[in-house]
Length: 304
Picture (cartoon, rainbow, N blue to C red):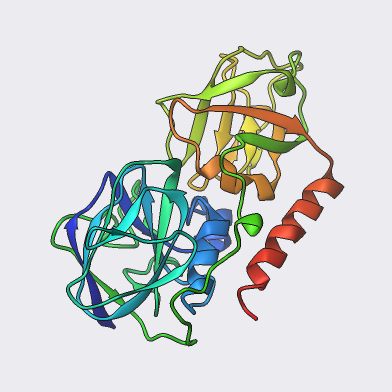
């Protein structure tokens, strides 16, 4: 491990995340990991890491970091106005930090979560096969917590050479400005359609799930037994406020699931912040698979 960055200011909520712990769900452990899997993987591939290497997830307000060595960095996901020693740097593109350079962020311009990928991948505490930070149990990442001032972030050895300026074309990135989520009808039904209304992300939302304010929906039928859940499931509790499950979702639950957001729309969902409006559009399984294939193709273009 090599020290690479020192935290001057941690931002609002900056954590170490990787691909999570899906293999531990059978034991009741939330999968966790990066909320925006596309942006997270793209950042890693841009700097020459394995797509599952650990990176920083910055929420709403980014950190201030000082480079302890020369390194290559890519910032993807939300546009939080990144700059190096006061100079703007491009999103979705590789740039170099020299020892002593300061990476900082300004105003939130688009999205909610930015990813900072560093060549070599971030080295951190591992728990159940993953270094993703699980804040609920205080495991993984930097001692199971968000970054604090004074933390030193170390990295592993870079595996693949890359060059500054390498980027991902805008046409291949998720359309974060279009807050429309494509979803497949769920196994349970509602007397009111999820697809005919606009909702607002409640302040009572987090990495586990988003509570959605707006039209109150009413589930039809009897209560259901608890069953397995996935990120993107839209639950409907008795109060009628839908809940969109996100990365840290519980592994099982008994609320009706009236829709499941397509995996290709989850990067857009990950970039929603409290107060943002969102709407759902019904799609088919076939179209959802085609959308996912297009995203995989965009990521694969970074490996060639």
